[in-house]
Image 1 (cartoon, rainbow, N blue to C red):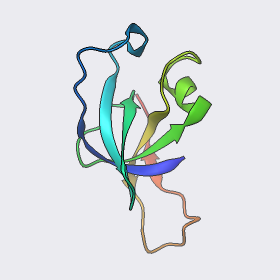
Image 2 (cartoon, helix red, strand yellow; image 1 turned 60 degrees about the horizontal axis):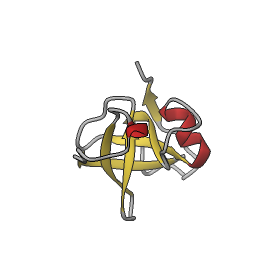
Image 3 (tube, rainbow, N blue to C red; image 1 turned 45 degrees about the vertical axis):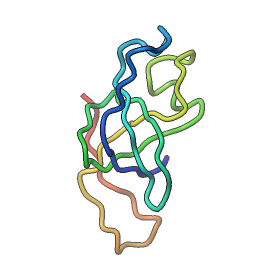
Image 4 (cartoon, rainbow, N blue to C red; image 1 turned 180 degrees about the vertical axis):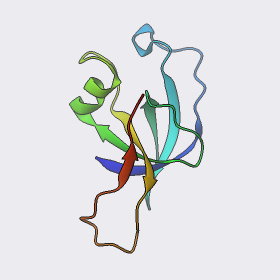
Length: 95
């Protein structure tokens, strides 16, 4: 899992049917580049989120055949950046 900040919605009207009508977001990893993530949780711009990649992203998006490399699994409510890196952020559960 990695921490990202939501920068905005990605609009892609022409896409493969396997993407269904899932919302796509542009996210940026702290100190890193932009990526596209599937949003099954309902994030908004500016939210800090936890996302998973690889096969975990497919499962989190709904099924093993879903074409996702990055899926948001939680919105971070609070975390203290001054704590050691091993500290666990508090997240809101997906509804």
